[in-house]
Length: 295
Image (cartoon, rainbow, N blue to C red; front, top):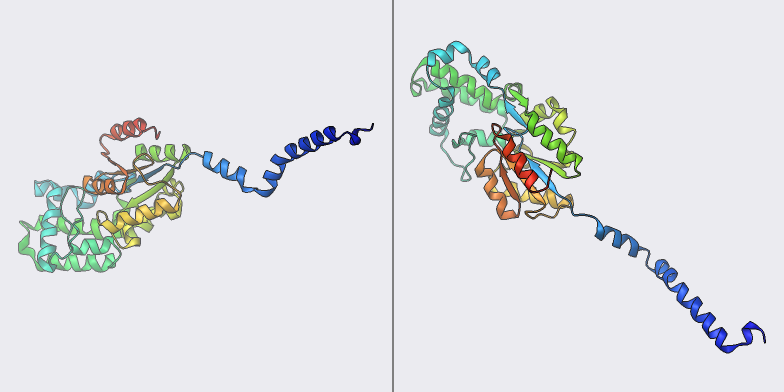
């Protein structure tokens, strides 16, 4: 009797053919199955968000003192850091303080409205500078001396003249190394900072070492988005950018580095780990990122 005339043999043969064909049929009818499996096996993305001023870049104290003039500083006999609060007070008296969400400078002084408007791109910086210099000249009695008034004018240029501000900036090499390490580890990197549109564009062109590492869509700047830290909307925009990049926004996957505590605190409400950066104690932030296994 031939092979195909044995009923049992035929049944066994056909069963084997059917079983062998099952994986093939599965692959043919569901081509996305392997892709889905591979995708689910990929590790979740981690993001590190850097502030710019006093983190990735820093103000050259030597350049600032040179711009003010050593003789003015000696004659003043006080720290030039005393000037900004005096200047802010004058500007608040001239225009009034109307903004509800307080933005502070690195020393914890509340910034006047006119500076906040420049930071968020609502007013041209050169127009602001002209208004400030006029205010200084028209209120000479507000200053304790002619020297103090002259220093205030120079500091107004530091704040409102984009080119002057840019000229004072240097790269913080330690922070740049952190940024580069994060990129090499495959993390998504972002910049989230308060700068006017004009000043930011100048800084971006001055420091390609920084900005060649960060995708353009990962740059979140107050002068572009119309809100400055610590305004709640600024953080919401950050979360949206992170989500668009495919990052799971939770404390284990997103880290924000800023030099001002008042800018770091709000990120916790969004499920982000905040780290306060001190350029004089860089190792602390480095150790924190190591502890979180980011670097």
